[in-house]
Structures are given as C-alpha cells and as structure tokens.
Length: 246
Image (cartoon, rainbow, N blue to C red):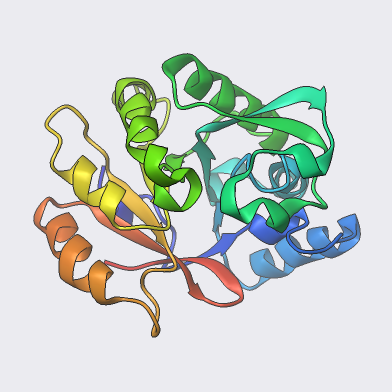
C-alpha cells in the first residue's frame, strides 16, 4: 500500500508524552493536547504500548473516540505486551530509555516479537484506543539502542513472527500497512534486503533532523524510494511527534 494514500497530510501527532514521559502529566492536560492537535488540523496519530505501559494509547483513545473514525488515521506498534501484573517501576526492563516512562502505568512490560504476542498486542491496543481497527502497525525498537548485542536475535524473532503476521493482516485487509518503528537505520537496511517480508513504510525516529541525517539520506531513503516504499520521520520536529516525508 502506498503510504501517501493512507496518511492525511504531511504532519502527524506522536503520543509518547501522553504516556507521562519525563513527568506526571494530568489527564486534562493530555486530553487538551490531543484536542488542540485535532483543532489544528492533525489527522494522523501515532502511539505505542511502550508509552507509559499503555497510558498513551488509553488517553489518545479517550479523545479520538469522540470523532468519526473515518476522519483520522491511527498507527501503533508491536513488540511489547502490557501485562495485568503490577511491578516496581525500577524493576522494569525497558532498555536504555527506562527512565522515560517511570511515571507511566505500573504494569509489567514484556518484550515479545512472536506471532502470538503480535496478535495479542494488536488486540490489546484496539481496546485501549477504543477503535475497531488500526491503520498502520510498526514493529517497535527492534534495534541496537534497546537490545545491544542481542538485537539481531530480536530481529530474527520478529522476522519469524511479527513480520509474517503483519504481512497476513495487511493482505487480508485487517490493517492497511506495516513496517518498522526504530531509531536506527540498520534494521531498515536489513529488512529491505529480505525476500520474504513485504513492509510498506518505516517510522525512522531521530535520524532525519538537522543534527543527524547523513545515514538516513545516504543509506536508507534512496533504497526505500527505489522499492516504492515510504518513510515517516519521527522526532524531526521537536514538539510534533511524527512527520511524513518521502
């Protein structure tokens, strides 16, 4: 699917702060932020279970449920499953960004890129987002910044599990598109070379900015364009979470 035909405009709203990133954000402040984005014309909203252990999805869904579903696009991510089990925040295995969401929900997070976990993650996200479908699904953070030397093992797990599930769901019309949602270019380079995975686009965060763009421009975007795929540049504008560019 051509990502340009899915995304409504060139700007989107990244909901990571709604998961109490860095600080304890009151519900009304979170809701007003989404409403302001809507009133400013934003119609693409991105989230993830990782953002506050589901809190961002819950808050985003609370506001977006007030609007007609066909008027906006939602993307979320798979690779982490939120459990009912409660744990000490300091004990969470959240990788190098664990401190980001210490004020989020206290539910335990499990990193899992298998087929079953992918399906469960999507089902749970549907409930938190209060919607009957998700337009785009990103495979989240399957890269070095979260898994260090083990990242290729995680990528292989996703290749055998999440990639195949998302290919099937896209082909069945359950979702419109899928790809990787990562902060590094290497996972994208690998999946672009695979013959048995067919992503539609990539959410590449923090690698298309004035300060850091060489690898994205020189290594990723030319091949993405050659294959007729798309790129969502995450974190390219400081106060808006996602920006589409191809």
